[in-house]
Length: 118
Length: 114
Image (cartoon, rainbow over all chains, first blue to last red):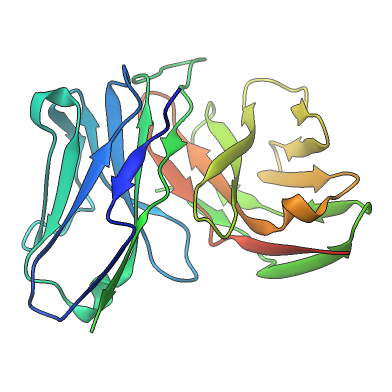
């Protein structure tokens, strides 16, 4: 079974430029997540999709970040314009679906994209 | 809001020894899930072990086991017979039911010394 794919693996841009990351989840996984991991910290959820609908984007800086999941499969995360503090690893994860009481689906993570903003 | 605290930024242990990583959390929920994830230098997060709060029995997965103390809100990971491949960042994480949203701690960098 293929894992979660992300591209690019590395990206260096100057501040105020724009950048986009791509994620292809595991086939059949309905839920997709984007996390931001700043150096020395644990990942922080930016946005969660259930199929092609947004479930939680409460921590997404909407003035500069946007994400979409067309057709409920692949997803892109965009930053425009980038700031120095956006330097981080952006992790994509997917799971079968949303769990409930007594049920939780494992999240599978991709290798991440390391973004450096200069 | 839930918080997860890992008080050991770095640890090292000799190969084949046993090591315990600490994690505490704060929540008002009664039912929830707790996880330990491993992140090697390749950056890919891998689930090590999970615990459901309503289960009193501590979870085990081969060389990995947890000590879950619900009243103390403590969730430590024990790695027995440590191997060089265990070298990685280890993150403790919390999840409420129905949310699927993971809240991570700041991580512990574990180094296994040959």
